[in-house]
Amino acid sequence: MNKRPKTSSGERVHLSSSMDMSSASQLEQSKPLMEADVQFDSWAEKAMRNFIFEVGLGPRFVYLTSFKEMLQTVHNRDVEIPTYESMLREELKETQHRAMQLKQEWKKSGCSIIMDSWKSRCGTKSFISVLVHCSKGMYFLRSIDVSGILEDMDELASVFSRVVDDVGACNIVQVIRNDASPHMRMAWHYVQKEHDHSFFVPPCADFCINLLLEKIAAFDHVSEVLRKAKEITRFIYGNVLAYELVGRYIDDGEILSNSCLKSVAEFITLDRLVSVKENLVEMFSSPEWVSSDRSTRMFNPLDWISSGFSTTTSLFRHICGIVKTDGAFWCAAADVLKITKPFIDVLLKLESEDCPMGILYDTMASAKDIMHNLGDKYGDILHWVDEIWYGYLHSPLHAAGHMLNPRVFYKDPSCDDPELSGRIEACTTAIAKGHYDPGRLKAQIEVYKGRSGSFGSDSAIQQIVETPQGLFGGRRMGQTRLSCRASPLGSYAKHALALKDTTSAGRYWRRRMRRGELISKSCTVGWSTPTTTGVLPALHHS
Image (cartoon, rainbow, N blue to C red; front, side, top):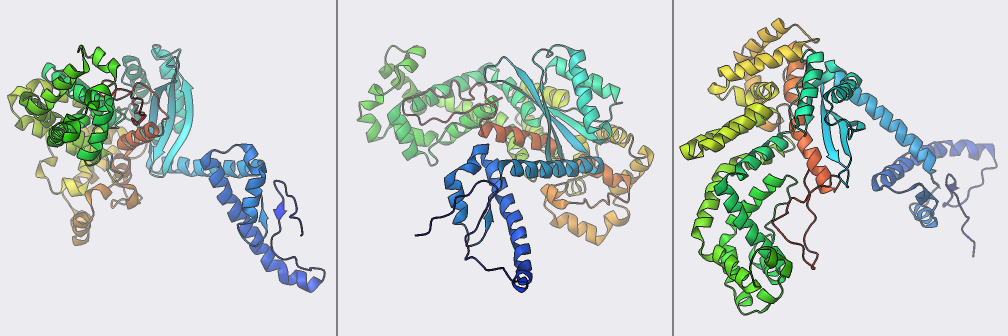
């Protein structure tokens, strides 16, 4: 039996039948095959490199015998095993090429900076990850340790100025942050002033809506509803039998929300609880529950002690009483959801991959209209809605994105109100600096508003009607219908409409949450209790 030759990293593994290449004619005939081999090796190495770096395997991986044997059985031909160094070198080249492409896109159509504030696992160190997002993708710039300068506005401003200089102030449309602390706000205000307010610094939309829901949760009647809802979920998730029965009586077998935002998770969980009320009543009346001693015996003793009940039986009766007979709680919960559901729906729309920037302005306006229609008894809450909207979230970019979405603007006569016009004026003034003549830009906006010229043509109208709202300014549009090369309005449209970064930032943070990259206090504190069954997921929020 012939032994398989040993190979090392970088060697070619010859699997096909050997060929006698002694003669010149045979060598000449083999040249096309050799060229094909080189092309194949390039493809194979790239595929292996992508796999190894994506999985996060260490450098010793390529030297394993099992890895070489795997390659040797892939195909009946020569396979060159790349070294880790060569793969790293090629990956660096591709990364640098990708970075160059992204930076060219920044100059062409603008970009947004994402300032991701986060803490170390032990909570003693504070960092800011700086990312740059444009229509072509995301670019990681650097991570900054700000542990010692969090309350030093001058130092923070100096750090932020360096970030702006590295990206290029003329390329920046907005800087999105998830930290609304006074020092951060003042530092960015100083940097904006330094650059003549040529870009905007809004907070992340998810952060603002979560802050709004946090304010709503602080009202006495709302906090009382949330307290009782937590008692129900803690009981269910702390009792083995109850948790088993939930899987049978509730369709998806889950009540708790896995949102990474604490207040959002609370109200989504409350919504699910109300929607499965009848299922819970049926579950607590079922023969399996009523006839089983496990309903009291298999409950976590630490939970009923912390709840202030002397026995598990008394806690069981209390929870069953809320679920079955406490009509006031269920009515109050339904009233609370009338307030919060419109804002949860805003978040759900923002999570869509084809959500252009102007959607936020439109959906928040609709949510506020729903609040107004509920009556004067929610006046205090409506005050907080306006406080968060105008004090934190509202940016002229949202108004501009709303106006430059023809599917919205041309169908709604109320779009061009004085407030909207004022915001668009601020946006055009800021973004036009250093790019084009503001006067010419304003004149072209008037042409767009009046549907003059090509904007009123049959083909343009047909495109507006047929194109889904979410695609105006979306990535799939590529070039907007306003010619970016022919007029400043086109470039302005790409700046204000095509960038969906306020919501893209939220999706980026949520993806990091799902991967466990941001570790902080649990979203579900107070809503569930740890059990020995190990069935509860580890949920986190920033």
